Image 1 (cartoon, rainbow, N blue to C red):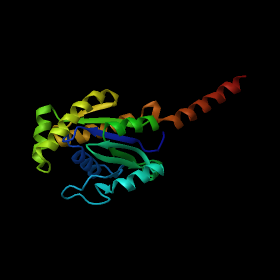
Image 2 (cartoon, helix red, strand yellow):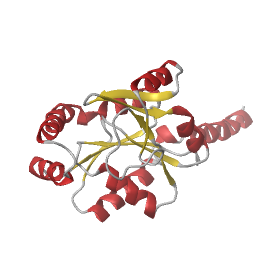
Image 3 (cartoon, rainbow, N blue to C red):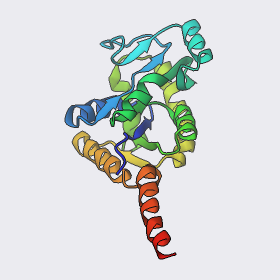
Image 4 (cartoon, one colour):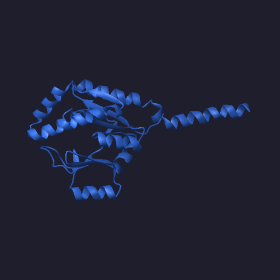
Length: 211
């Protein structure tokens, strides 16, 4: 079986708990690696450079685009977000399942470049809970929350492009559900190209021997 890691995209509405889920998944399963995104937005309280994000300005971000240093990038609520290319490809080759925590525009670009990638969309149980979670953050204005809810309406139109939807209600259950989906997806033919090629070549030897 192929030992190359799986590229996993985890998206979801702002407030769905993507960051919390990913942190718990990394704590409990050592076969995962998180790709740290680059962004032009300002750090939130407690966020660290190179851990949650690489924080930069618009000029540097656009230069990185020109240098083909990102596998995807998108503009979201007035800021750029993007995924550095080198880290992703190195970790996949080493057998790590690389998690990209990105929004829907970037997810679709990843799927176009990496057809074998696994797309998971995270959502709270309902829209009221989503609004409550955004309000409990206490880091954004009412106007910012309204923008994120408006953006969620737009994002809901693209959910069908994902492989799986996971409801984040009880965190521990959600983490194990995501892990189970990743493990099951490893057996999909699209992620077993080398094994399929091997078994075909072995079978062809029987055909040649019968000629």
